[in-house]
Length: 633
Image 1 (cartoon, rainbow, N blue to C red):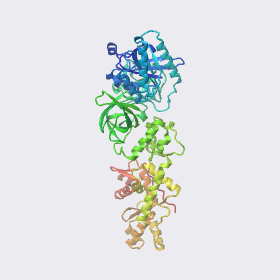
Image 2 (image 1 turned 135 degrees about the horizontal axis):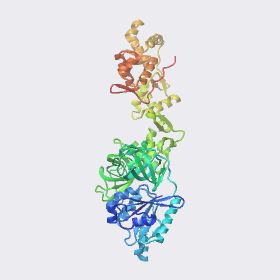
Image 3 (image 1 turned 60 degrees about the horizontal axis):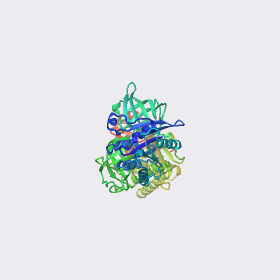
Image 4 (image 1 turned 45 degrees about the vertical axis):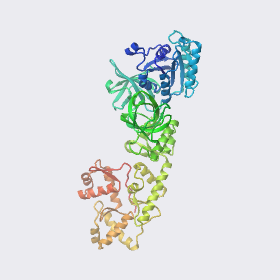
């Protein structure tokens, strides 16, 4: 169990820590000289049963609130220290507020220097402490009278027994998830190299594992581990760890960096979050600068309110924090906000989306998504999160939100898993597809009403009309489901309502057969309208009008004016495009035997109907685009 001390300067936190563990956490020369704690100190005490009690001794001086805030991250129980002679002081209140803001929910109180106060004073301070804690999650926390400077003090012994029992009854922290550790110290050891220390907030790590710095991106190999002050073969969530890293130098790592599983290393400059200002804080307007303490990191950010015009004292507001440089965070991370001068704690909050958008951040859909994320952070219900995502969630994004590896994600069997690029998958609830299917039906019905002689719309053109914002994977899934269900039908490359047909007269049907046969026989280089009219002894206008009608019926595709392709060879050409590593005019020409001009015409046709997209001189198949199989005759 990790215990963090909190309290005013010179109230005896370090002396109490030494009495509990036998370790002097004032390790810096300046701390010894000044008699106060400047940096975080760490002490460990083996407990009966094999457990270890870890105590983080944090500074109490006002100027060192920043260091204190980083020390609280990851602790499981707060040890609030109040000197009996001084009583409650300003930093006592500020430390208590920081504990609440960072989500600590268990605490006990050490009334130190009890030998310096009479019985009446001790009762008075205990009553003051009870009143202070009454409106907090720590109401009713046990109070121990201690005189830590006196050897064998019974109050210290009673406090240690309480901490040991609390450690034994504390539920084990889940070790599921991807490894993540916030760095609060970095140094070098002669003959060993770079060492970082911090509290592991998720997952586990072992010697030989590959980790990555975030931000920074440098990768390192874990050479050795100390957990709770002892050599270990593994480090786990909830433990204080020292990691000896190979492959990175001390100068590559800063206090506040994160050491994470490489899959968690993506960083962002925009973080959407909920912020609550303390009742005594001043209001904050849009773009107000603040100091943000998250983990052991300290950043400057600007506040952009999302659901209000500003931030009011005592209120909870949804905001986007815009940072000057990328930082690492995950949903559920707690943070503290201080004013622009770093002299006052204003409040704190919880991260909802560590990858906030730069545009449309206040739209209804975006705010609804943040509300779903808030539910996820509070309840951890993955089904709710998926049910609130109209476009689904990529597994890679869900992994970064939940800190769970793909194999650890537990989703219900009815959730659709759609393939994405680079081996990723999109998870989407079937209920999310119903509104999209309705838009498809409405779009086709409108098109049929306006263009009754057209067979329908090519699926990617239809997408641009009814769902341009939709990602390709979801669109492909919607169309496939509707085709399987029979709610839409396909005519060649076009989609249509099942009730819609384009009818040919008997005379047109008689002419169409020979013309279609000639076009199919031409394969990749079919005859032009003028050539068909000559070969079949027909008027050009008659041939042109009939071929256009056949194209509207989905039996042909018009690549350029007066040039029509049969579905079978066009499907072959689409397959050739998909198989080329670099589909440019020259490579496509060589693969098909077409001339350069014709190759360009066909490639531009594929761009136009949405099968490919042009990037400079290359025509790239869209990740989820597929060319329909030609109808069987």
